Amino acid sequence: MGLPRYAAVRAAQTVVSFFILITIAFFLFRVMPGDPTAFLLESPRIHPLTRELLRRRLGLDRPLYEQFFVYLSNVLTGELGYSLYYGRPVTEIIFGRRMLNTLTLVGSSTAAAILVGLVMALGAIRRYGSRVDPSLTAFSMVTYSIPTFWLGMMLIMLFSVNLHLFPVGGTITATRVHEGVLDLILDYLWHMTLPFVVLTLIQLGYNYLIVRNAMLSILQEDFVYVARAKGLTESAVIRRHVFRAAMPPFVTIVGLQLAGIFSGAVMTETVFSWEGLGRLMFEAVSTRDYPLLQGLFILILAAFLVANYAIDLLYAYLDPRVRLR
Amino acid sequence: MRSAEALRLLLRNPYGRLGLAILAALVVIAVVGPYATPYGVWQYGVCRPFERPSLSHPFGCDEIGRDLLTLFLYGARVSLFVGFVAAALSTLLGALLGLLSGYFGGPLDVVLMRIVDALLAIPSLVLMIIFAAVLGPGLFNIILVISILSWPPVSRVVRSQVLSLKEYPHVEAARACGAGAARILAKHIAPATLPLVVANMVLQVSNAIIAEAALSFLGLGDPRIPSWGGILRFAFRMGAVSAGYWWYVVPPGLAIALAVLSVTFVSYALDEIVNPKLRRY
Image 1 (cartoon, helix red, strand yellow):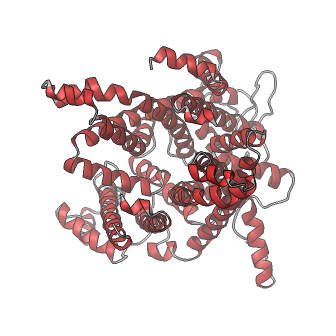
Image 2 (cartoon, helix red, strand yellow):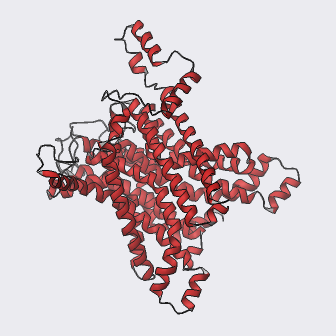
Image 3 (spheres, chains in turn red, cyan):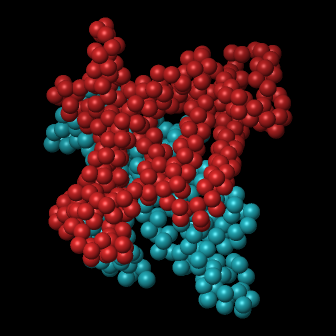
């Protein structure tokens, strides 16, 4: 299979995944026992005639399959309805400041975790057999085991409440008039420090283990044997041969991890009151704002399917064996 | 490999030993603990609000004067129960779907694997939050939500092993003798996937404990008896973090981390036993 054909097949699969997921969303939000419109329609304070009118206006008197097609066309045209809590279009709430805040936090911490994870793995492999690797492996297991939100709470207690070094939460100091853009950015970064540390830490151990394991298995390959036999120094072998061969699996795994990172971001943003999509999701759950929750779900799944697609293509480009399968 | 032998190898591995020891201790706390405390979960006013740890209340007190040690002991029960049950259910479901999908192939396989792809592509916590929010909080619902959204990775690994197993001579021989699909699956294929299934179940336990903690922290857990994650939710909402009441925050989080860590140790040890290649280098 050539690259264009592979791209087309994966694109078709992505579209199928998208339809499966939005169909799940449709049934979840309409047919499940806790019908999200029930509390509006079954409230005793609403007159039966008003209720009937409302049902007709919302299209709930139509057969299910008709509702499904209306839903499909709405989703495909980006019509996601109005938030019950904010009273504004769902798309308007999601796209904008909220999304920017999440992208900044998740993007910077992911980049940091990749960089530091690579450095850690290289260091451990170079001194393989010393105590570096066991201690870093133990560190990875510990960071994996600590609940994200608890790590955040502990950091707040230590650095914000006891040492007064960082704010307890939020994105910027609301009570302060900022003098110019630089002041605003510094204030923003000051608020971002602790959430950034949490999100970096929870990814770090995983990145380290992946690169380490990939490099360990590559060390047993014949081409490494040859590289050593022709007299290259151990560090040149690792840098030029082992490290490079370990990159393609690392790219995919970082890609597959994106979904997990976002889950971490939901918890981190909730604890630090970071005004992003994760925190928005928590608020939508707390206020039972179903249209907003549904809109968030659809946009998140669309974003992740596209990201997965892009990563698969990148992997196929980096490692031709994939598309030949 | 018989299970007695597997256990012996596990106990010989230092990680396996440590993991099993911590896990056993936590299970004992969860089972016996609630009988050892004189207070009930909702018995408030037994001490001053936010009282510091003392001899009579070793873990201190919460905002309505409940004994935090009592909450901790009951919380152990909920956290571990949900973790183990949800992990067992999702592993069972995943193994079953993987067996069927791998053995029969065809349209069933295509549909199932597309669903697996779709579910793996998006953040599982997001899906769990949405499912739990729509179903409403509760012990049964949280187990349901975690198990029906955690099976995809298990089904994928089991399926790929079944794909190679069904070409084996002994399976072919069974088919030639006229054995039906059910008998071949039950007698010749399922037992061979068991080590893989057990290894995956261990991973599922740690994932389920983490997921339960996160969902409870967001207010989607069991409202009657708070789990460790549920205690942390109270602590956070009642301002224990910003007031620096460490005794309210430290024990439940530490316990979750210990539970997950011990399971991770067991899984690491299992990996070294099942995969001897890792021991060589």
